[in-house]
Structures are given as C-alpha cells and as structure tokens.
Amino acid sequence: MEWIENATADWFPLPIRRLPAVAIPAGAYDAKRGQYQSVEIMKMLAEQAPRDASRVLGVTDVDLAIPMLSFLFGQAQFDGPIAVVSLCRLHQEFYGLPAQQDLLRERTVKEVLHELGHTFGLTHCPDAKCAMSLATHIELVDAKAEQYCARCGMQLVRRFASQEGGV
Amino acid sequence: MKKHWPILVVDDEDVMCESMAAWLREDGYHVDTAPGGQRALELARATNYAICFVDLKMPGGMDGIETMMEIHRIRPEASVIIITAYATVDTAIQAMKEGAQEYIVKPCNPQEISMLVSRILKLKKLQSENAILRKKITRQYKHHDIITKNPRMEEILALTQDVSSLRSTVLIRGESGTGKELVARAVHYSGNRSEKPFIVVSCAALTETLLESELFGYEKGAFTGANAQAKGKFELADGGTIFLDEIGDISPKLQADLLRVLQERRFYRVGGTQEVEVEVRIIAATNKNLAEEVQQGRFREDLYYRLNVIEIRLPALRERREDIPLLAEHFVQRISSELGRDISGISATALKLLIAYDWPGNVRELENVIERAIVTCRNGMLDEPDFSWLQQTAGQPQNWEVPDVSLGELERRAIVAALERKHGNVKEASSALGIDRSTLYDKLKRYEIVH
Image (cartoon, rainbow over all chains, first blue to last red; front, side, top):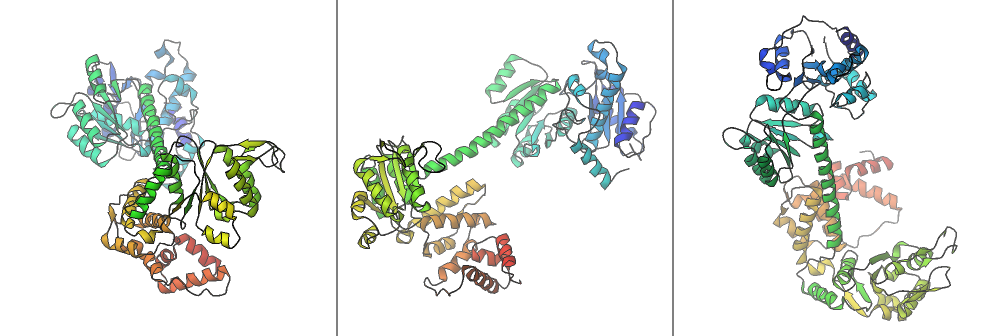
C-alpha cells in the first residue's frame, strides 16, 4: 500500500487516504471461470466511496475479468471516479517463477498510474514506455517505465491546473 | 483520430456491454452500446459505425446473425464481429457466410481483441484511401465524356469517332474552356491508340528553349544542367498521341522544327547528332484564328496546312445554351459527391440565370461557378442567391472603359466600389469580387482601405 501511496503522491497533487479493507461482494465471483467480475467490484466501490473523494482506487489480489476478456490487470471508469487494480497477475509466482518483491512493486506502480490516468481522462498512449500504453500481457507491463510520457504527463498537469480535489 | 471510427457493442447482458465499452473507451474509441437488435439498428441509422460487436445469442426478437444482416443493410461498410460463449464450427461458418468479418469466443485474450480492432481499422483506412484515389482516377479518365445534346457538338463527337483510328493530324479550334483537351482525349481514347500514351504539352506555358527541350528532349551536356540524356514529349508519346495545346503561341523557330517532325516523323534531341524516329499522332489546339495569324505572317502557312488536315471547331458555351442545364446538373452531381456535400440539384430560377449568362470562360467557367456555389450553399439545393455574384457580372457591359492606372490601383478601386455597393458588408463584397473573405481582408490591409 505504501508503494502505491508514494507513487500516487508523486503525480497527483491531491490528499491520499487509506480506507479499511472491504470484502468483495459474493456476486462478483464467477465460479465457472474462477475469476472475479471487475464491473461488480467497481459497483461496490462506487457504493461505499466516501462523498469527499474525487477518485477511489481499489486494490485486490484476486484475478479480475470482464465477460468479454479472459483477464484484466485493472479497470477504470474513463474520466470517472472509480478504478480497480489486481495484483494477481503482477506476481512472478503467477507465472510459476520465484517471487520478486522489487518487480512486483514496479508493476503495481505502473498499473496504478495507468488506471488512475484513465480516471483523469487519459487514453492509451502509443509510447510503449509510457504508463498509459496498453499492456495486454505481463511483458508489456515490464516494458513500461514507472511514469507517464511527457505528453500524458502534461495532459495531467493541464487537467490539475484547471480543476480538482482527494484520491 | 480514433474518434472517427465509432464502435457499437450489442449484447443483452448489461455487464458485458458496459465492461466492453469501458475497455474500448480506455483506448480512446467512441463506443455506444445496445441491449438488443432493435436498439442497435436505431443507433446504426444515426451513426456510421466502423465496427459492431454483436452477441450471437440474444433472447427475444432478433438474434446476432439477424442483427448483423440488418446492420449490413443500413451500413454495408460496417465490420461486424460476432461474439459467442460457445464455439461451434457450424455457427462460426454460418456467421462468416452471412458476412461477419470475424468471429470471437468470449472470454478472449485482451491482446487478441486489441489486435483485431487495430487490424480492422487499418484495413478500413486503406479502403477509404483507396476509394478516394479511385474516384480521382475515374475522374481523370472520365474527362473524355462529353455531355451534350447540341446538334453541332454531336456532329463533332461523331467526327472524333470517325477520325480516331487515323493518323492524320487534327486541329481543334475553340475559345478557352470549350473542352479542346476533352475532344483530343476523346479522339485518342476511342481509337486504336487508346492503350498508348496521351501526352499533353501546353505550348504557351514555356519559353522557346524550354519548350524545345520539352518537346524533343536533350543529350547529356547539351546545356548547363543537362546532366543526363532526357527524352522529350515526342519520344514519350511514341505509339500514342501528343496534344499540343495553344499551338498558335509557338516561336518561328519551333514552327520550323515542328514542321520537320510532321513531314519526316524524325527529329534531333537538343544537342544531339543522331536522329530519333517516332510514330506519333499529333493533335493541336488553339484559341486563335490561325488562318488570320498566317495572313499576318505570324504563323507559317506550310505548318498551318500540315496541322489543319482535320479541323474541329468547338462552339462556345453561349452557342450551345441548351447544354447548360445538362452540364450544370452533371457538375452538381460530380462536385457535390466529391466534396461530400448533399446537394440535390439546381432550382429552375437559378438555371434560368445560368442559361442567360454569357460564359466568356465557357464550360470551365461553368464548372468553377458551380463548385463555388456548392461550397457556399447552405441548403440542399442551389438557388438564385447562390449565383447572385454571377448576375452582377452578367449585368455589366462587356466593353467598359479601363482607367489608365496600375493594376493595383484598379484592384483597390474595385474593392472600394464593391464595399460601397454592399454597404460595407465584407462577406457580400468578397462574394461579389469572387474572392474569399480572408483574401479580401488581406487586400484591405495591403491597400490600407479603412473599412
């Protein structure tokens, strides 16, 4: 959690609050697929979100999916308040490899920046090194840097210059 | 850019629609969703979707394949991707047979979907580029379509057919804009040379020496800058036709050179010592009265007779006014589709105006006038006000006195007069002057006209 808070504070000039853990609603579990529907989790986050938060980021260890796709690293409401990130497939263990804390931290930060970027209106970036580039498998996550490219970063700055108030 | 390619997701399950739409929106696409076939069709009528994801099994009403077929009826160019939870070979085959571009089984890998979408859009981009280019090419080749119901023009067209397969030189006379090049193309493309090159040389556009090397080519070192041998237009046209436009404007030396080519079908490249032989048909055109030029001693008589084997004299547009409605409608159709404007035609009163006008620039002027009217037209039909500027020119006497001043001063006076006539309305003044508003503003600044 600290990793996430540190990285978020670097990019977003907003107060950050850590809320107590909440249980995933039973309805989100898809027994056939052994995965959780991220849309249901996002709905739950939207219901429980404190009124004064401009953005709510859920972090989970369970494997996320939507009906159309076999898995997701995370999902966000485009230009909206809710985002969720799953660490499940960011662990080296998921790929049958020994655990690597540093790598997990890097991947988590990249995905958090990516999903929060969407909530602030950023779309996918063609620059593979930018946190906003679309990663459809773990190698693409690893190809990214733990930061936005200049263009996406500037877009965020402009956005904050014109409005906003706490993650 | 991605906004130009809207996407539709059709599925009875709300969570499927919303999650898929959200995922695509993250990629920057404009995405709409529909819970069933009926709603999908309503949306497709309003929006030209590039891609439609359609679930195969939807309870009640239309299933995925029916929905796809209806979407195709409304938007034949939309790519439909059928989604299903159960992959069976039969349904896959049926969906593809009925025109699905792809068939995917959910849940699928995120990479698969993102590659699929970008592949389809790449194809769409190529297709639309291709369509634009093709339109341009057809336009070029269609130029030998001559539209007329004027008996004299019909005679001329019949004559072009008769002489198309001969090698005799043709001389086309007519005012500028009457379609001399079109007739030359008609002669070339309807004869036995149609597969061979048709080369156009505008003789008035070049100086004597340039025109000489343009026509006959040059050898390496013939003059400064001649770094390599170059073929001239006569050589390039070998086996085909060379069209010498504005032949009345060439110098006496070139007249002599040309006469030699006409007589012997042989020439030297500039700076060359070896003769080049060609088999070329020559079609020449002029807006001058060459017979008179001969009498005045400005054009060689022997060349004139060599060129004037078959003479075609094109009537001015004002001598074939019955063609004006026909041509106008044709231009409206062609230009509005090229510009992507939805213009249904020309009103009867506007047509009357066009028929009454004298058209000093002939068909070319008519084409330009219509293009301009289409650009500025606000309704679906070209009407009198769209040609109001034309009326003013038409009403003016042809032989007005030109004051003895510089061109710039003349322009300045014209602008001031137009502004006065239009009570200072820049939009109307610019339209009366036949220039656009920004050009008028530039000129106001340049002439320091306080407006």
